[in-house]
Image 1 (cartoon, rainbow, N blue to C red):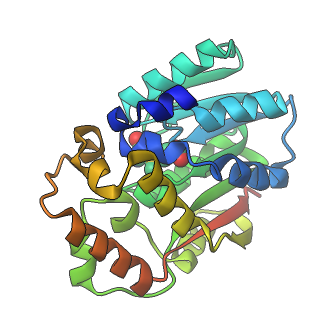
Image 2: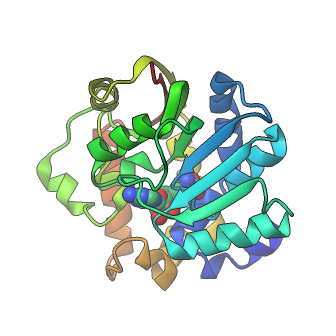
Amino acid sequence: MKSELDDSKLMSLTQVFGMRPSRLKLIADAVRIAGLSDTHTLLEVGCGSGVAAVFLSQEYGCNVVGIDSSERMIALAARQAEAEKLAYNVKFLVADAANLPFPDSIFDTIICEAVFSTIVDKERAAKEFRRVLRSGGKLLILDFVLRKEIKKELQSQVSFLPCLARTRHLEGYIRLFEQVGFQNSYIEDYPQEVKRTGWWIAYTSGSWVKLFANPSAQSDCGSKEILDVDSLIETCQRFSKEAELGYALIALTKP
Ligand SMILES: C[S@@+](CC[C@H](N)C(=O)[O-])C[C@H]1O[C@@H](n2cnc3c(N)ncnc32)[C@H](O)[C@@H]1O
């Protein structure tokens, strides 16, 4: 962990994000609902560099499959599983959440942490989650959620920041999952998580200014060259306040 942090100026926004200290605690809280054990097979959608997948396999002995649309993230994740000698229990592959390369009903649990907000075709992804889960299986979505409507103009100013631009309302998410056939939604709020994430990213990168000056981080923002970081940060703060940006666990069951 330390060596990766020391190297943080070379890390992408996704990697820095994936190493936030509160993350594994949130994930451990969420998987309590699924009662993971060594007989479980879990799919992590948008696994990034594989930190959570490796943690889940080590902590609960379950088999884990991690998918991510980024080849770079999957290469990092596979390297980590190999280093931890987990290559048999944890598999990683490049795949799209909206087109999962698996047969029907093969996973006991799906976890998707800070990913659903970034997915473009949310309805197709939700249908795919339902298809690959077994009956009685749990879907655990941990993510940013909006609580208030925001003005179109403000939305367009953050359009290149996937986590903000594509985040939807909590109620909208629940409606979507129920429409595709999930039931028994359970919600838990983590009100401090947005601030904590902001502090963590600024701390590991030296500052937000340094982070956005880094080409790896810019590539996570559609390679947009960010000319005025101060004004971008101000816009993000305004967005967060006006939309009442929060972080929540949405747990659902496939009947
Ligand atoms: C904000 S990062 C979070 C990664 C990881 N869950 C974490 O917290 O470290 C979002 C991840 O979702 C992946 N992603 C975005 N859209 C995806 C899709 N349609 N299918 C699979 N992965 C996707 C990105 O490549 C990225 O690694």
